[in-house]
Length: 203
Image (cartoon, rainbow, N blue to C red; front, side, top):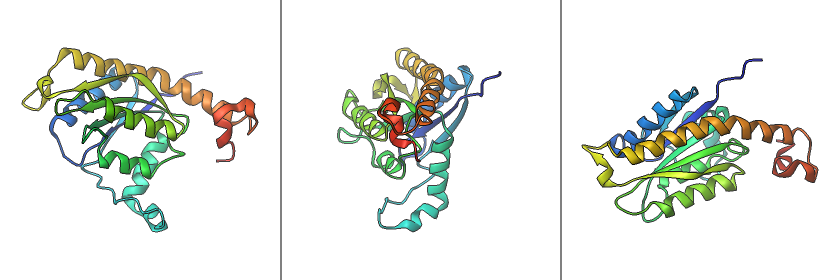
């Protein structure tokens, strides 16, 4: 039986169009395609989301929110790219997370950050925490691009490009396996034997 082609969603987690983050995303997109997966890019500068208001149920019917939820739900895996703002992920990416939960459960993500000179650890940790709290799994390997890794806003560092490609290949490699195992466990029902997936047996 022929396996379905994995679907990977790359999220450009900034309201700033183009620039360094877009260059990293372009390399990630190329890496996903080289690995043989279908890729979609969600550029949050092009899909401006409202600030999530928990009490406003009408937000769920907005075209932008429906698009965000649909692209996340259909993805097997994710590459999440954030600028580092004050030692954290961007507000745009956090707001993306706020509209999601079940769409990320049992999924797999690789993480990347673009910094102003810092190490990126704090921003990557915040992204990892948010994805994990949605019952998703993250690759224990990441890429960080600093100002000196770019020329004219284009990523040129062989070391960082190598890491971006490795992450892309690993997301394509592991995302279908993790999602398949999670869905199989979820179908077992809500008993403790089904693990965390059983929490979602009725979803």
